[in-house]
Length: 287
Image (cartoon, rainbow, N blue to C red; front, side):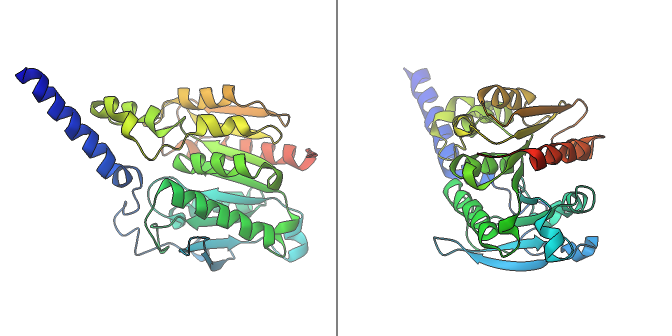
């Protein structure tokens, strides 16, 4: 009886921990140190830009970078990448990637710091980030230049989950999806990231159920970028997402055997894969 009581106390403690601190565990907006105070600017990477403040439907002000190619005529001819970063840092930390997308793939790029990240207001949550993503896409679709371009949604890690959810609700508004090292869902990822909490996945309120959302995609092309040496998110998550989706636009999975969670983007051939995918989108006629 005493053993059962002790186990029950451990169970309650574990469940309480998951319920109370999961947002702090998942959304690392303060890492690395200073991420809430300083956001690097595109000009530091030689990129032209505008910093814009958007107000979401629930009245939270979020910051975005708008990086537009050349003149309006040139920009209209190129894809616009809507870029969602991972669970740590802010949009400024991803500017080296934006630079490659701008210079190598000749894209317009729109980036945002989610609520509670960088200089954006609010506190992060699954519900809130989904609203932020929709706000950014709505901005693009109303932009005097970008509304004429093909929009490709691109997300890394948590940003991949944000991307999949957004596109699953707006497939008619986008022309392609790119995800890197993302997961099936938080409950299915938790046992790998924090093994002692594997029995408490049922208590997750931050679910990000990409395995369900991705099955809603039926038309657009999708590119999966996977690091074979990812120590945080097992590549099997990407493999299963790839198998789950059935889309008329076709799907491509590019494996980088030596890519870890943070350096898959630095592997040879990474941006070449994106550029080839973008050329396919240029030739893709969405019905």
